[in-house]
Length: 218
Image (tube, rainbow, N blue to C red):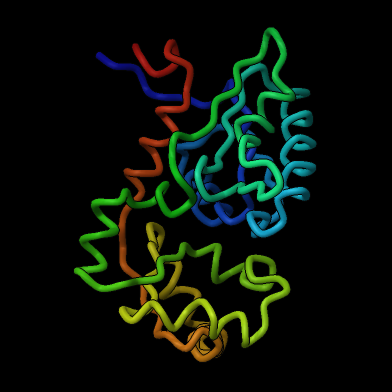
């Protein structure tokens, strides 16, 4: 009989964009770990991402010997000055003997909620802009420095509109008190935004896969 997966011996360092989903997993009892966040939207400011990620990793090491970094490897950190410097390079610089540090094996936060095949299915052959609840909730940070001209350069190409990958029923609840904010975002981006329920199984699997081998097996 396989024993219940536990994260109690772990600290998690995550992008703040994932706060809604990770807090939900904590509240529902799946994620029994301390979670430390970097600010949302740091993919736009790689130098600041480095500073915050390393600072939070050092803080995590004060409380746990095992750490999971909830960041993607392909799009969350792009160093235009040094293409060989990746997010894993940044993480490696704070590794030391006696600590287990693993990063989630995904491309970005969207890949944590729905893999490429599921996103293709949701897009149904159209060019769609995907986002997660955090992209809307923390839009002022995720799109910091953007104006209408930036929006016009980026969003109209998504002729299939925008789809929020929503595993926690965030969109409908958020719309109760913030419907004008949603409409304002759609107007600013010049594309409609709708939500599609995707469930939490993908995110749970991604987190479990980052556990040490001994903690993944019975």
